[in-house]
Image 1 (cartoon, chains in turn orange, purple):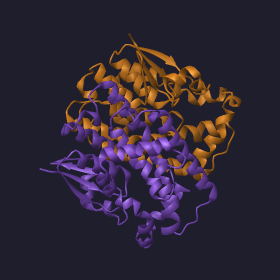
Image 2 (tube, helix red, strand yellow):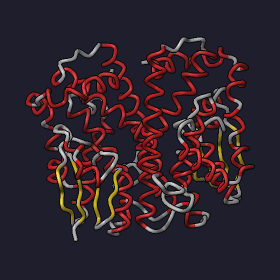
Image 3 (tube, rainbow over the protein chains, first blue to last red):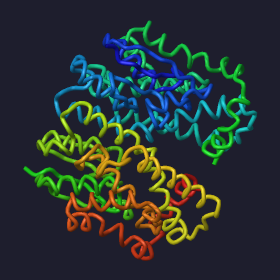
Image 4 (spheres, each protein chain N blue to C red):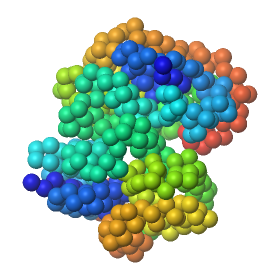
Length: 242
Length: 241
């Protein structure tokens, strides 16, 4: 029986889970949960993931959320090739170290750019103060520097010669601000070269397929019915601009 | 050879690592890295953890940071009792699910209260606007609700009948705002009962030892020489306010 994956491809963690599953030929049935349309608030989805976030997974009666935990689960359950999540304790620790750093290390900063560049000004018609944009770009810049200088260094991939789930989790976060118009690769040849290696290791077709929605975000936001998102507007403004 | 642990017990993730190591009799040598005194900026510590955060670990030549990754490493390396980090895939997934949710789910919010209640007004003599305090308390409140209603529910511990590393990582985050003067257990009998169970499972002596520094924070901050921390002040203000 296929594992059901509940995804919205605009969301970074959904993309890493999708690419991991497809690359490893894990039998999955993808169900779309459109965040823009508030589908995470349906009663049905609440039973899958009471925290109401994507991605989520249903494996028989077992449901769970959180992309990193999901990939760790799938890697073990489907016995994917060792390099994705090595059995060697120290190599695995290096993967987990990146996975532990990244929620506040990069994800927070990369995510913010979608809101500051697209959601706030275009959907909600809220002006983003220059100082806030500047701060956000600086935070993102510092994060990318840590990825390059501390995690990657001179290695082809985060933990060494081969791709692991750390690279999948990293690349989707780097693609998020890129998709909304921040040239994250400018003056960062090492980051760009790493990203190209990740694309090659995953397969360009799968990578592009996974990123189709987010790369179309700049156009897609113009079509959003902002009245549907009115209830979240105040909260979003508070989180993003405070 | 003992594992070297680089810790500052005021830091939540250092406490979970400490309690885990000591409870499991893992041979460790604890080295204090005082954040308040900027000891994480030494050249020596930079070699242990270039990200310059605590906790960090040195196992022979192998160095690493990130408390969750460290706990996962130690559990496997020292083959600690299964309940801490179960081998069963679904139970392990439940532990990992909590560990993944918690950095932005609770840690961020609990940490903030220490800054708003103690560091900003007492060390930096910066007034905290009422609205900021109110927002921070609301965020913390929502997080504690998720812990109670979604993760704990009616179970004794996060993943079931026995304590796991998820509970250790959770309890230190709940203790942080508590130590800063926020009564997180008020009107939360389930959370309070869970915390008591965790204390009992870890051992009261070890739990209290791990929390000695943070529980003395309200007094300790009065003794801080704020001139040493002057150059962090603008950044902290920007982040917290």
